[in-house]
Amino acid sequence: MSCSTTDNDHVMTRRRRFAPKGICVKCKTNRGRIIIRHAAYCKECFEPVLMAKFRGILDPTINCSEQGLSVRGSLQAPGNLLIGFSGGVGSTVLVDLVKCCYLAPVIPGGPKGGKKHPRKTGRPWNKIFICYIDCSACYDVDDRTDEVKTAFENFDENVFEFVPLHLEACFENGQVIVDLTNEGLPLTSGLASSSDPQTSLKNYLGSLPTPSSRESSINTLIRLLLLRTARSRDCSHVLMGTTLTGLSVNLITSVASGSGFTVGLEKGEDWKSHDSQIIRLVLPLREISMKECAAYLHWRNLSVIPNRRILLSPSLSRENVKESIGSLTKGFIYGLERDYPSTVNAIVRTCNKLVSNSTGHGPMQGGIEKWKEHISVRRLEPDGGEDVGRSDLSYLAPHICYACNTTFTSLSSRSTRKTGANGANTQPILMPLWVASNLKIQQQQPMSQSKMEEQIRDFLLE
Image (cartoon, rainbow, N blue to C red; front, side, top):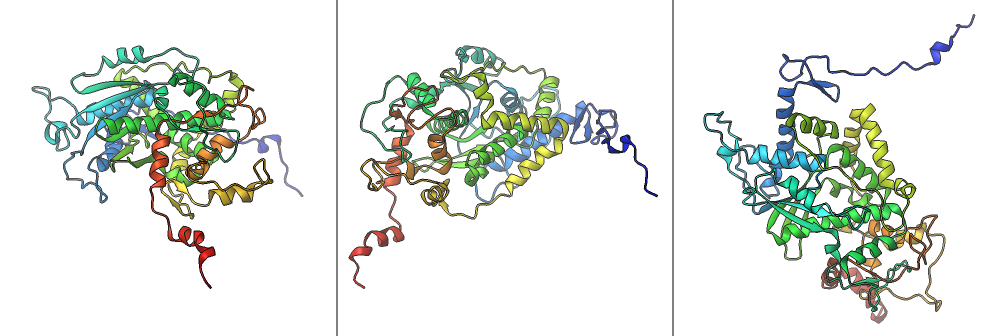
């Protein structure tokens, strides 16, 4: 006799929703006000726990040393501090945490604090710069520098110094012009279509083939502009307000965009400038979720600047923006955090374990040309029908990583090699100003032994 089944047996049980009805896991006394990964915290215990996470990430990076920082050591950075500020949730929480953890004033008659109180440890950085990069030239919005400057008045001007920048500054005095219609990215000797930095930025983004490549390029320009601004102001640390949720989005987007070789740099890096100055890029909120930051903003009565970015220019519809890898990944990760909060943390922990088995020079992966030959279904040849050697002076492709190569050369269903995103003919495009200096440095590097043997192989006697 077979077992009888009913329709209710095939229906999955509804997932139990956790509500802040339990007792705080920290003090075991107060009622929980917020649930963080299935654990309840009260308002009084939430802020100390959040600050402990923040300091646990940032403290070991302040004293720049390979061995790290002892728990009992003093905090003294070798340079100043620059904070990337966008006016959003993460950057607003970041500025407030830096102020509370390292710059808290001593209140007469108030609590003296413990050993880690700023009154006893001192200020780790001599100067703190808050850098805002306006991206209005990339989006259909007005310049918000004055709005951000007004919000900056809430901070202590004696402690923080406001540094407003525009993203088009990356193209001031640019020298390298590249023809994007050729996958080898040859350098041209002609003039760019415009010498205006804002127009050059729009032409640069408009020449990229896909919405994903434009979104990735904007993030890369912002990151490099922050690092170079920090170098000009003698900063040893750069902080960005990327949360655990944002880091998960960046990690998945990087792997999907061809940046798997350098996925470890998403959580921070030690950037070395041309003058051998090391600037440490740190994400102190990389273990704090967006939900925790929102609760911190609410209970601290902090305000954020609304994000009015609508459309990527030029001539891109809202549908194209939604089709970018970053936008799709963001919607997917935000849904995971809402329904399964532990999964977002598992993504970051899994990506931290990834180690490349390939060889390369820094962020440059070796064998990019050979890899593209293996995955290509056609052979690219010049108009004359003969292969042309890509010398160091004539092509940009051998000097960029696989992700940047994909950004410039990937094709979409709406674009071809001869036309850009808006259907217009693609002209030679001006590259950011640091491309010329990076090419000169790579040309000055000593030749490897294998390359020397390859060049003199025909002249050796057997």
